[in-house]
Image (cartoon, rainbow, N blue to C red):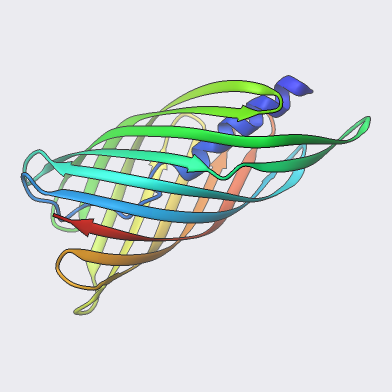
Length: 209
């Protein structure tokens, strides 16, 4: 039971990492984009039921290696929280759940509105049950298109062996360098023993220099 719960929560940390920030499709060679996002994801598993809302702060950095290729990195740190889960022997409290996660990837811009990416996610979960590391390799596709002078739409989809992760939303450009975004995020892991699903709203700010 303890092993299953620890594994579930470690895999859960992947729900807020990949493609959590807006796609950096308009970077040119030598340009950098910094982003911050905050997510509220309602999370459940088949075995443990509703685990409540997962809150996380994420920082994104992307650098244009050329006008087509960019290296991307994300660092995510969740807010510590407690979960009450029901087992055959009654309710069990898992306290101080917190994870740190780092994502490194390469993004290739196919054209002005479409990009593909691949990379690796490394994360570590800390809780009263101990520490559990986790690694996931992913590939993905991202889309972004202007729909008015200041507003853009975006969508991204990530796929690995067991994970399907997509996000869609709107970007409001405050100027040429700074933007705000609001998005909906949906994550499913069918390979986890408890079939994890997380979905909800995230919002953030991005700046290019």
